[in-house]
Image (tube, rainbow, N blue to C red; front, side, top):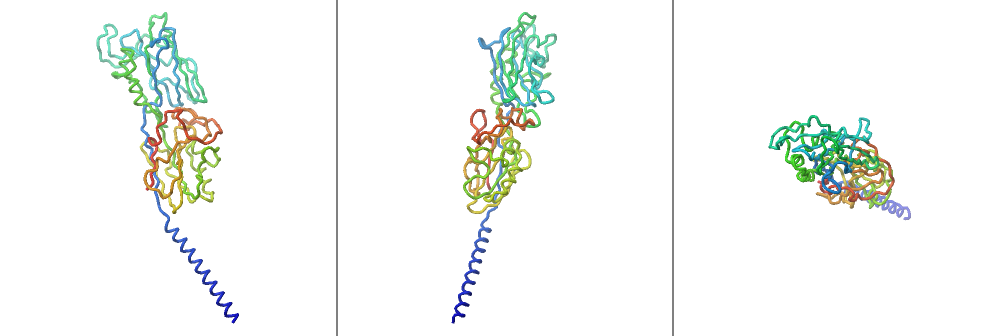
Length: 406
């Protein structure tokens, strides 16, 4: 009897174990079958502008800059960029001062900033719209004024702050006592945007040996920069490329890519935020126990108008996080600020914010010589990760990046 009871008990235990294993297998299969295939897409929707910075200058005590007086212009630039300015030669019918195209050279061939006297960069131009003697209307191409050396009438001096990548240009009216004594009118200045390979406006303001335009004509004939200022305002703004985007599917409540208010963990966020290199963080994330999968969208910078995608797999309850570099910065990145269900669908751009990784000193976006855009190396800093504020006129997130899941 005892033997039969033991056999029955053992058999029951075996059946229960088999049922238990079968049940586990079924649950595993159900979980596997419940996984969803999704596609996440990152699109660069920024509107490129011709100029990254621009402005107007005038005298301090009166709008004109009289002989002996000076004004200063502060602006940022990287080694591929230059400064263009224009101001009327006041004692003329239609002459104006401006540099050669595309502007005053700011860096030498070694990438070092040019400082000191750069007066040789200024030229005097005849707008070709008025006869120099009678003032009657003409229609001639813009050409250099012969017989007048502009650098004897105007002194240009450059200073440079390497940490900010900021120049200060001092313009001094040195025409007093010369045969060409003249006031300078209020003027305009601009720095052309650079997209990583070329300037977006290689001939700002005017084209030599071509007919003039209304904006430069108002400066050359009237000393009035208002039309040019309006045109510059409409065509000035920060733009950026995006790096390939890293996407991670994970479980739990903690975003494995970054933690707001904490120092960079040294697992690869710095490499993305400074250089757009996703490989270090990609390898680091793969070793974390709560990470289900790591994916990369794109293999090259994402320029305005382009998009990249990555396919990923997620189960019910999984979450997704992503990061991509604000390419024209020293150490900024876009990432989701809010937690995102990996099985979400549609436009999730509203969950995205722009962050500063705290690993490199900031410079003007798209005009900082230590930025990767110009082949530079950010100057190190060590502060906590934070949201990028309003120190620079950066476009709203939704005007730069669009993130969707399908």
